[in-house]
Length: 569
Image 1 (cartoon, rainbow, N blue to C red):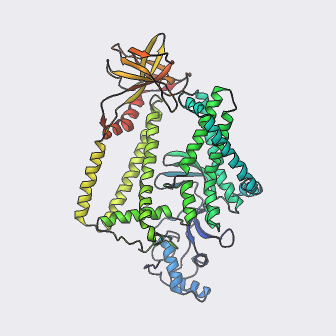
Image 2: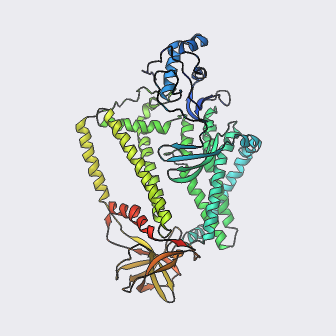
Image 3: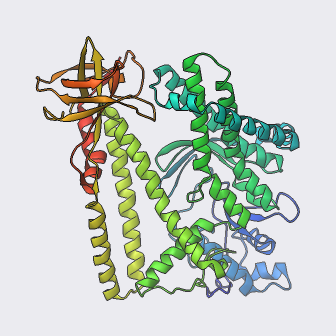
């Protein structure tokens, strides 16, 4: 790609910013990278790397060119310095004529924020550990380890087919709190092994993981192992295998767990193994989606040898949108200040696919954050004031990030000098579309719980919730962890509601436990069902409401109502 950026003055004395390093390839024909705080920022060619290493701040561009000799010219060196400066890789106080005022990054920061919603905390450098374990990891990643893993996965598929009815039965039943606790611990430990799998595979290929730690990834807690050093590997296949090693760990664990569940007789252990297997399978599937920076995206990016595929796709989608408004060039050949950018010029004949992929990369995080918020919002009922406040604070953070993104989009639109009539038409059409979507009718069904004891069935809800009116028909269902069975019907009685403590099992799919929560209950009448369990779920069907009203109630009203309830042992 031909750049229109001017080179820096020949008298400039460029210097790499603090924390910026130029790293050699791992092997012959490998990749040179420029890293920031240990994490690769850009991939460069060997000539650019050779020049960048001479940016020490004690020699001018003309002096560097003279030292390099033929065929280097001062303009060549100045252009590389300009690109590095545009990418934020030169020191703010260096004499470059362009980057003054930018705050230099601190080396080795433990806490790092990655827009839009990722916060990483590094707990250490695992390179020495993986170097010591390299002989073992090479054996595991070799042919014998692959054959054993594949055999376990095949056995898991067979066990799933043979025990499908048992799996469904587990999903239809509540779980003991002890199983949930052990399940959570097992998932956490497996996620750690997942990350170690990335690092072990990279180490087996001769690389070195740079950081390991914990993070909030789009509001969801997770672990991470920084294997971006894999860009120094010479083969695409190796880089893709490093990315796929983590999902492979979860897939093998899922298969082994479902096989083990066929061999145990204890009901609680059987349920825990089944749910652990399904959780591992779901985590592996989520990690393989290529629309956020998870393992699937890293594998796709590595296979295509396109380091900034997602960024370039979203940029292409943004350019296309601005182009529709008449203000931005549709061409992807615009100058890119990043050094050696693979950029939009790679799109070529596949520009349409790149734009479609960029749109999905924009939309998928919205759905992911919405799902996480939905799970948080529907989980705080009955848990008390502190969880509800944490959720509301998280909701405020998301609102701030969305506002910031909209503000940046508005500034980009204004800078592109769009056609005002097209902008006005797009604004009207967009507003009308949003209004129409928010008016889509959705079911207003909500769920509470029931308690059946002493020949009486009572509807129960967490404190602060509004009970259905007397005479409202309701449906009684089982309290399964994922699947609910219809048990019968009833009608809300006209008795006086009673407030007091209730077992948490009346509101969430767990077996009876010592945990109690503030609740409100009222007797049910005209109960038509067979034998009922002690606790179950009540579905209250109401008139259809608009999607906007449902969103307001789900994400704001219910969490606010939870401020008045407390869970206690």
